[in-house]
Image 1 (cartoon, rainbow, N blue to C red):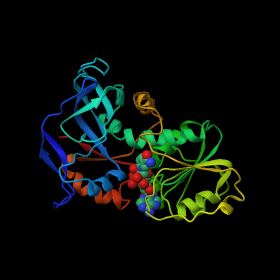
Image 2: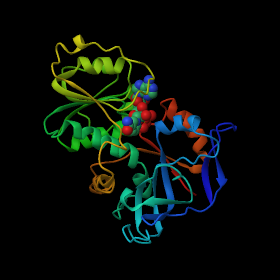
Image 3: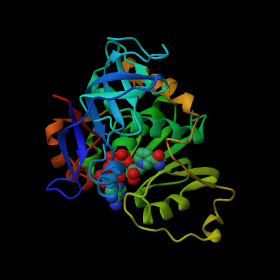
Length: 304
Ligand SMILES: NC(=O)c1ccc[n+]([C@@H]2O[C@H](COP(=O)([O-])OP(=O)(O)OC[C@H]3O[C@@H](n4cnc5c(N)ncnc54)[C@H](OP(=O)(O)O)[C@@H]3O)[C@@H](O)[C@H]2O)c1
């Protein structure tokens, strides 16, 4: 079968190559992959991982072989799934507890946008729960995580301020009460701040967090460090900086229910992933566009 393979020494960071079929463990189903999405973090992995490594975490498709231990969806079910790697292939082996069945009105492409970005959005927001009536500030709101977090926070009753790089980047941000082009334009204090830009953005987040409020730091897209001093919290007593990693933030068995929750939000119309859709043969060209902040929402690829 064909699969995306890491080629850090080649003309492009990844290439389509022939690879062996997946060999599922007893708790794994084989999924015929129809769509997948790319995450900013995976761009770094292309450089860090060796030649021949197989990338790919966010996939959607159809179960062609249920798990031998009978714990997975059945053959023919359309599913969304999260794999550790090797998901970007014609077929992938997926643990049964890392997938959810799609309602009929959820497209495979929409579903493929959800695992890493959707779980990150959902789970970072839980650090501020309950969100009803609270002020929430979301940096990188035009990006994969940010645009989903903005919609989920709004659905949860928060008053959302979305930070984007410029007005054009804000065009696809749904659910925000206000969209500002730069965190320096933020007014007042926030109970919860989702921060993944780092550098000056994190410093500004500290200046805008409520007493006892929470800043969830889950990335450093700028690559910049942030000087930190206890005195920065003088006007924000007992505020908390919470680090976050989507893979380990909650128990393994929570993946399937959280994926099911995300697809149910899409099915009911309150979560609308913004997609840039391409053939998987165009993966290598889209990477630089994502890196350079020219992709709004999620880049999703058809396995065609
Ligand atoms: N900890 C975890 O478990 C976890 C999980 C998923 C993602 N992440 C991290 O979270 C961040 C967001 O992920 P994503 O998938 O949403 O990425 P993305 O789609 O590339 O979005 C990143 C957003 O960050 C904004 N940004 C602000 N300053 C930036 C800068 N200096 N360089 C690049 N972008 C900047 C951009 O907004 P504008 O274009 O509007 O300027 C962009 O929309 C990344 O750092 C990623 O590695 C962490």
